[in-house]
Image (tube, rainbow, N blue to C red; front, side, top):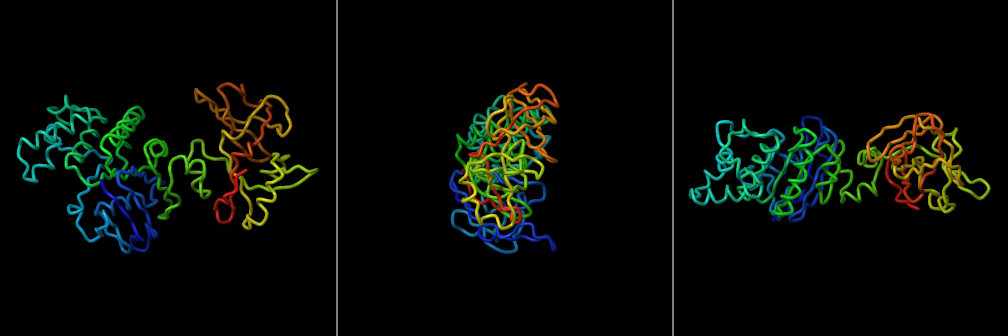
Length: 367
């Protein structure tokens, strides 16, 4: 098992800085997922760890040893890419065995290693087939097997299931998770798919424009986003975000998401908690499950109209018009029967997030 550390890593492509002062520690046996939009620097960071890209400043350490000046072949790291990169003229057995041929291992030891890895990946019955006879999922299993057979210090995966269809992606997510639980190898996995990140990671590293935005468990980045980018990038549907104003009237506190709406009622202590914290303006964030919808008028509920309904089987996503804007709510399937339906809604104060609009940073205030 292997400990990886990045200290002040910076990388430029010409005048474009793609990694900006990256500091990150990856513990022995940890499964880290680097998540971000295309062009955010996540793959460049992965390639820098592998030795496929040089860095301009900083240090990359593996087990306490600086490796940024070592060739990739001297770092003892295996990498799996989105493209399967299998030798088409070789059998599955030969593809997996190929990295061991140059190590001087005996045929007996190579055979043992190949069959052990094939057993772990559940592809023993495919060993004599050629890649052309395999499904996409099986080809990716072979590619992973070829990386595993060397018993590397760490596994690096660059969107390894991105080219598969939805059903195969789901199967391979479970397979990669099972494999990590069994092997326990230090793994760094790159993806733009938040479902992959949330389901696979011990911790998620979220990047945007070369800057590390937040590092945390899936639960932490979902429930406690540190800024507006993370709040709107993690979660599907994304968090509702709106610039807001807070007012006190007749002993009640109202948060208005639009100047024309009546405002959502919040506990009185909100004013004292927010006082002086949002110098750049206040934005409120609420996930769709934090918007509570009722057919009955009740204290604290605001009358709204359903503008769009997205049926998703187990639940619906309903867009409710608030002034000139929209707020999305998650409801039981069929709860709001048709567009134009009049309903009542409130925001669950315990699920509300507050951000400084100008800086985008979370105020860290929860009720």
